[in-house]
Length: 286
Image 1: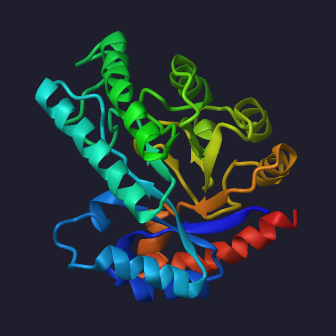
Image 2: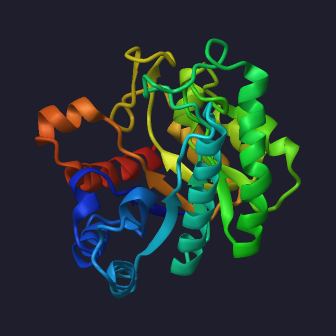
């Protein structure tokens, strides 16, 4: 049976573990997703991770995935090395927490104006070689720690849709390398057939799922990730295909309807959690 989760963001990132875990359970979720820069920050009080995990146990939820998303396409070799070391260190920390899945992306980060631009400031081949350089080190480390690497294809990055993510997957034969399925990005590229994508990756490669809608084209300012059910993602086909392959992992809401959050909820990210949990039930009934 699938489990449902919610990616903590906004003000939620700074709640103590007890408040966060109780809220996630109260909103009707089985799991919470966390961001490495926040939970592993040196500014966190001593014992934060231990307290958070206890609170999750007490509330009957678990941490489904830690986002360890850092740009791998960087011009400076020293910066790339530092990024690889940070990712590997945070994979080790996730393993120490008992978290078995971490989420990675490739870069370059399209919303960062200082990031490299493929085809302009870096060639396509050189950019991919930077990604291979990173995964050549990261994959053995993940295998050593018993952690699965769930690569999420993201608009504007090297791995941005089913085909480019598949290209990365095909280079390595590791059972520790798979995907964080988020078909909203595929939808922006006109691949609005989640059943095809799910069947191609299959249960063995889909380690985690993000639930998000999308409408528009993959250019900055020309798309939105709207409320679930308002965009072009075919959720009926998505859920049916996940059932078809026997996926029993976590389907986690990644809420990025930023204008709605700002205008309707005063910037409070937590208000999305119960609303999107209700939306899930409606989508499942389609």
